[in-house]
Figure 1: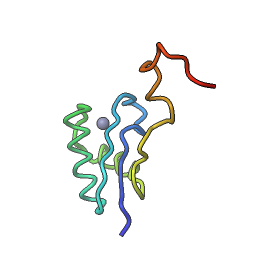
Figure 2: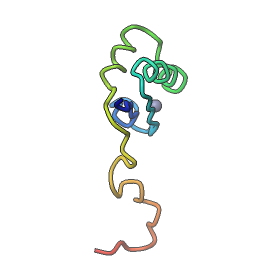
Figure 3: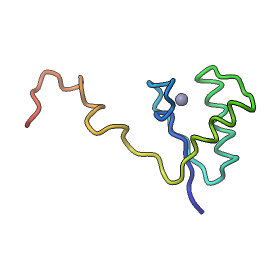
Figure 4: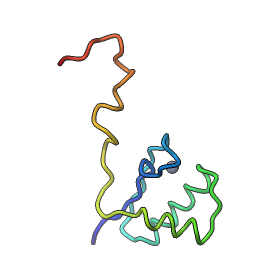
Amino acid sequence: MTRKYIDCRDFPSDAHCTVAISADDEDELLAVAVQHAVSVHQHTDSPELRQQIRTMIKDGMPAEHALPGAAQSGKDSGRPLPH
Ligand SMILES: [Zn+2]
């Protein structure tokens, strides 16, 4: 069985949400993703929303990091990075 997931980092309108949801079953994943979209992103549960979320479902596992190095910028600002 293929693991399926939705990564909120792929949502173009919600750039700051890094939540990823994964499940074995597409309907199960969709149900949790709809709850997340409604409670966190103030979306309205509708057939259109479910259709949009369904198009975001991907096979496999979410990537551990959005972009290599992006999370570290600003953290070690006092120390020069090695080249
Ligand atoms: Zn989110």
